[in-house]
Length: 444
Ligand SMILES: [Zn+2]
Figure 1 (cartoon, rainbow, N blue to C red):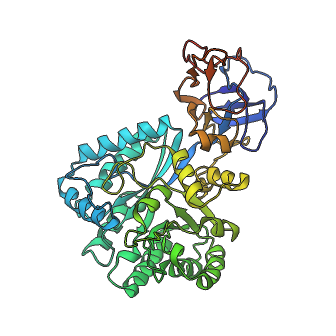
Figure 2: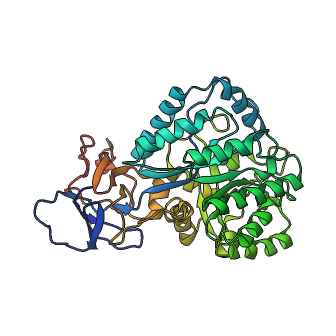
Figure 3: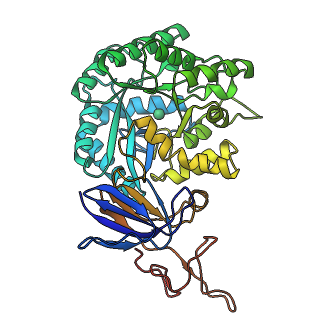
């Protein structure tokens, strides 16, 4: 844990020209023109936006970067993805799992993404992926919070031995209880799986995060059971419904009754915009449903809504690069959240709202919070999303983990400015950290 003084940054709440002082890994002061304590390294923030780190509330680190192994998903559907993952599982080795996961964590750090909740499949009785990701979790702990969910991909009731494997995974140190009620064979089995998994979490004092109603079937209503069991077992604020795509297709009257139930249970909702828009509506001809859950309505009902990346280059999704601003941008488009407040809500959905989902301690930019943040080449959260803003500086506990120069393009147009950088309020040309016409140079 280190000391650091970061001068002249803008904050997501609109304050500008602010300094941030980190002492022994924690934020000690935030304000204009802070006095510089002796011997503390100082960096110039160039007036750019400082945000708490990005957080991903829903990811699959056991399958990431496996795209094309053993073959690609030709139909592009959820179900072919699941069967393709089934083909890949017997071929997995611990070394390959660890290597892919660590590589992804490198990408995450470079993108200012310093906390990830990853599901890990527990249906393989060898628990190969569980052991690999527990190893990775320990290895990256100094710079990245990796929270693991015991995820019975093939259904905790449908797959023989899955419940025992799931319990073994929890015994080994996996943090959160997962589930997939819509993949059980019947609605009744789905509801039963929600009940028994919530009881298991309550017994062990753990959080719950289920893949819930990842379907276009308007009658897939397991989220109702999830909220009810949360109530019954007193798990308020500790349970997350991931995907919830069936809500897109549900009857409006039914949803008007469901939303208050979810809010009362303090259920967290996590949409996965890139994957939802790619996988949902596949049985439709035209019009084709978007399939993402009802984000604006959930927010209006007081439900905490986060966005997850879900997949990067795996059997379900061939793209992605650990960029939570790309996730926010897709969520913004699919939910039509183009207003100033809507755009801000999408920024929150990949930062503070996801931190609430994970229950992260000391998250934020107030004094007392952890000295973790990311400096973005943008002036506001809205501009950060619009530009998928470059990450200039990534800091954990006052220690710089990654840095990149301010990006600018040299223009060679007679009578026009010598450079273009796409921000609306570009810094003055002589400001430190700004690239000269000849090419980019090191930033702060
Ligand atoms: Zn998922």
